[in-house]
Structures are given as structure tokens and as C-alpha cells.
Amino acid sequence: MKKLTKTTALILSALMLFGCAGNSAQSSVGDNTPPSGSSVTDSKNESSGESSATENSSATDNTSKESEENLVKNIEGYQTFSYDADKYEITNEYIYSNTYHSIYDMFTPVEPNLDDLYKETTDVKSSELVALKCRVAGDSYVIIDGKCGETLIMKPFLSLIYTPVVIEEVVDSNNGKCLYNKGDILYIREHYYITEQYNDRSLNFVQTAEENLKAQFENKSGEFDSSHYSEIEKKYYDGQMEYYNALRSANGKYIQATWNPVFLQKGQSYLIFADNDTTANEVDGNIYNNAYPIVFDLEQSKPSVFKSEKEDDGVFRASYAYHYQWKILKEKYGEHFKS
Image 1: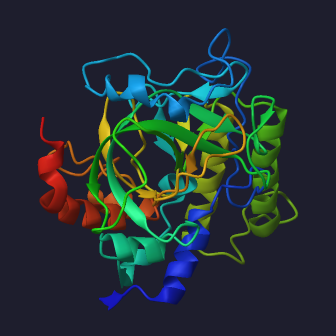
Image 2 (image 1 turned 45 degrees about the vertical axis):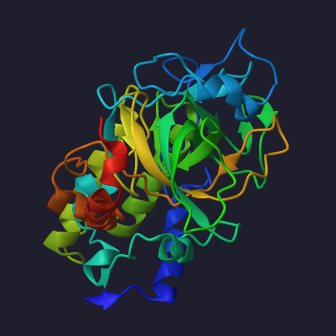
């Protein structure tokens, strides 16, 4: 197979930004606008604007996995979320239509070393990546149109999820200087959507996507136009309609994800390739880190799957890359993740 070219890397970088703009119906019919209740919450009666990224003295003393205490106190008024694999189900349109073919069918994923991963991660602003062993340190921040709750966090006005992790070990810095220390807390960007109970705004995305689908494939009678479209296209149409109906009746159980099937979860440690840049966000001093968008659960004996490795390759854009890279990294760094 051919090596992943620089041009393809740029294409993949663009794909990585899939879903970043919450008002793009084409990229995702469900945004991550939090509901009025359920597990997405407004943090109340918690800490002030004091930086959670600078609470290193207490974080360093509490890095054991046995500790259930959050190392990050949710700032009052911030909207938070906690992913739980036992509570939520991963979904996306490709699971229903089953017509997507991974871009990695044609290319070998980038080798998982610091230099090559940095070239792949074109939205990283520093001059390097560092490999860190990190444990999830608290609830994720849900940022909608640049705001977490009512607080403006970042520009441009993106809709993103950032999860706090505490650094347990600097695994590899490429013989350079890592700007982080054990106990530091970073907010790592994740690539999924929360499809909690849909509000009017979210339902508009579903409605618009469905209308576009009907306009393309239905005849004037409102039926699938079999005179112009094939059975394969009929299968795609039926799958998309089923997907939209599922989102409407999700009742808070779905997580939308098209990038990879691995999310940061409390109580677990991961290998994360982080941007080696300690520049804090101007709001509340937190470090929002655009790390390499795949995290690796090297504590496990085999890579995580949603359905199966083969099926995952068809429904997650970077699943094949994740499986390929995980096996190399497990052999290279596995000793750091033994119990």
C-alpha cells in the first residue's frame, strides 16, 4: 500500500475538523447542544475561576487510579459532561447506511512516532508533540459556539468537547524538553457529539438533513424514485431515513462519532500525543490542547472496538489507523501502562 502523502494528510486534517462547526448540517445532523437536564449539567456551587491547570500540588499527590475523586473542580456555570461506555451508545450515519469506505483502504496510516504524527496533526500550533501517559481527571467541558455555559472560552465560535486529564508520566519527548510535568492538567479536545434530548435547534439539523435527502432521491409523489436510482442508492436512502428517525427518538442514549471509537473515560489512563505548548487559554487559565485526535488505551490487552475491527473500519474514519497504530505503540510503550 502507498504511504500516506502530504496532500492526503491535509485531506485527513480537514476531515478531523468534521463536526467542529455546530451549525453545519452536512457534517453532522446532531450538534452537541446540551439539554436542559440529564447528564450534561451546569456546574453549581463549585470552584471559582481559579485555574484547574495550576492545581498541580494536589494533582501530583492524587494520581493513583484507585482515587475516585475528581482532580478538577467544575467551574460554576460551566456546562459539563461525563462519557460512560455503559450508558451511551455510539452511532453515526455510516452505521445505518453501511456505504462508507475508509480513506485508509488506499493508504497506510502514518507511522506512530512523534515526528510523523505531528505532520499529520496540522492544526497543532507548536513545533512538536510529546507522548504522555494521562488519566481522566474530571468532567468534560461542553463548548457551544465558543461558550461553556455562559462563559466565552475560545474563538472562532466552535462547538467542541474538551476533557481534563492529569499527566501521570512523560513517556516520550523525542529527546527534547517536555514543557509539562507530572500532575499537570490539560484539557484534551475530543471528536464526538452529544445527542442528548434534542432541543429545537438540534432538531432543525435533523429536519434539514432529511429534507435534503428527500429532495435528492424522492419523486413528486414523495416516494423513492426507483426509475432514476439503483438498489444500492435505495439502501443508502433507507439507512439515512432510519438514522434520522433514530436521532429523533434517541432520548439521550447516543454519542455521535465518525472519527474513531475511543473516547476518554473516567478511571482510565491513555497514551496521548499532546501539543507541547503550555500557553493557557485566556479564560480561567486552562490549557486547551489540540492533541493528535486519536488516544490509545494501552492498558488493555487489545485495541478497543465498537463492533469489530473490520466493521469499525467502515464506520469510523480513523479506525484502521487506530488499530494499526495501537499495535505498534503497545509494543513500544506497553511497559508504561502495566498495572
